[in-house]
Image (cartoon, rainbow, N blue to C red; front, side):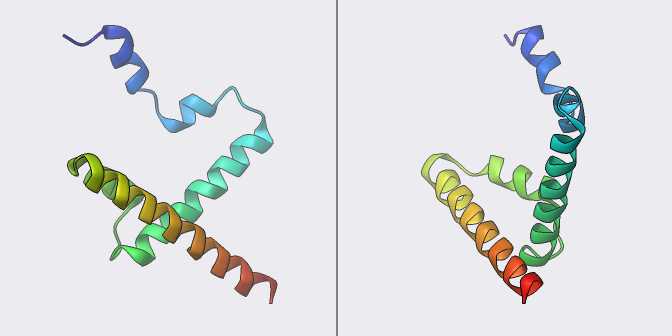
Length: 88
């Protein structure tokens, strides 16, 4: 049986979770979220970040951890290349 308290927490959107943060912090989170969505669209055949996380949840144990870590590394590389191009 699942606690009703957990269900209520799980239904909060990302925006609701950060609503109490400063305006600048919310802007930074929004920028990162847009960057990650752009990364997902380019790297994973026009799939959204939501689709990527849904797929990650279907993987099990070590496979999930490995794919998640690999995705994070890919994202950091993507941002590094983007920033390098931006500053040049």
